[in-house]
Length: 367
Image 1 (cartoon, rainbow, N blue to C red):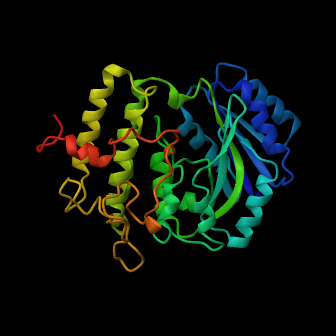
Image 2: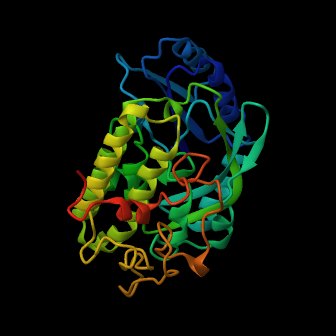
Image 3: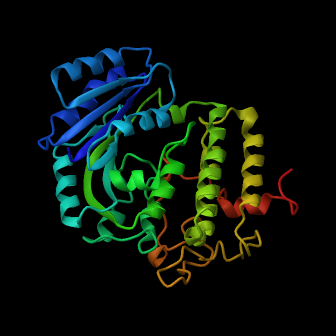
C-alpha cells in the first residue's frame, strides 16, 4: 500500500502535463501511486499519460468515455486509490522538490491526521513567483493537531482541494465526493475541514500554483459562475444534516456572501448582462440562509464577532464590525489586501462585502 495516491485529472493541458507528472515522479520520495484521469481530453493528454504509464509502473491511466468535468474526474479516480492519503493535484500545477518527503515526515510526526494543510506559491506566466500571503496561519498552528473550531484561522486559507492531503479512510468513512460544476472545491473543502477530528499543517511551499495567462476555467467569462450558488446550497445542506455543526452557520453565511461578491467584483467572470441576475440570486440565498437571530443589518451579531463555537459551546469573539473574518479571528487580524480566499488574486471592491449586500437589499428581500 503506497503512502500517497496522487489523483491527476487532465483536460486540455497537454502543454503543462509532462512538467506536472515529472514533478511528482522525480520526487526523492517514491512510495506513491499516480492515478491519472483523462477526462476525454481532445488534445494529446491521453497519449502523454499512456506514455508515462508505459515507462513507470506507479502510473495508472483512466480514459473516461465522455467529459465529466474536474470534480467528477476526481471522483472517477478515487475508487482506484490504494494509498494512505489522497492528494488531488491539478494537471497544470507542479510539486516542489522534496515536497512529498516533507509531507510524509510531517504526517508521521503528527500521528496520521485526517488532513494535512501545506503551503504553496503562485507562479505567473511571465516568470514571477509569490508565496501565499497567509503563510503565517500555518506556522501559528504549531506542531500538534487541532480541529477547525480550535484554530478557525485555518479556514482563512485558500478554500481549494489541492493545498491539502486527506487520509483515505477518513474520506471513505464520511463519504466525501465532488459535485459537478464550477467551484466544486467549495462543497468538498468546508465539509472536510469542519468534520476533521485532527488537522495538521506544514509550513513549507510544496506546490507551485500556476497562474495561466489564458485557459484558466475560473477566468473564463461564462454563466457557469452561477454554479457557486448551488455549491453553497450543498454546504448548508451538509451542515443542516449534522446538528453538531450548526454553530458554523453564521461563519458560512458570511463566507458565502464574501465569495459570491468576490466573483461579482471580478471583471472577467460574469457576462456584463448577467451581473444583476447573479446579484439577485446571491441576495436571495443570503436571505434564505440567514442564521437564526440575524437581523440582517451590520449591527447584528453575525457581523460583530459571533463566530464558530469553541469546545465549550461558547461563541468565539471577534472584532466588532468586522465581516467574513469575524468568526475566530485571533487579535482581529484581517486578510491582507489583494488576497481572496477563494482562488482569485483580488479582494472584493471597496464596500462590497456582506455588510454592503445587506445595506443595499430592500427590507422584503431581493426583487
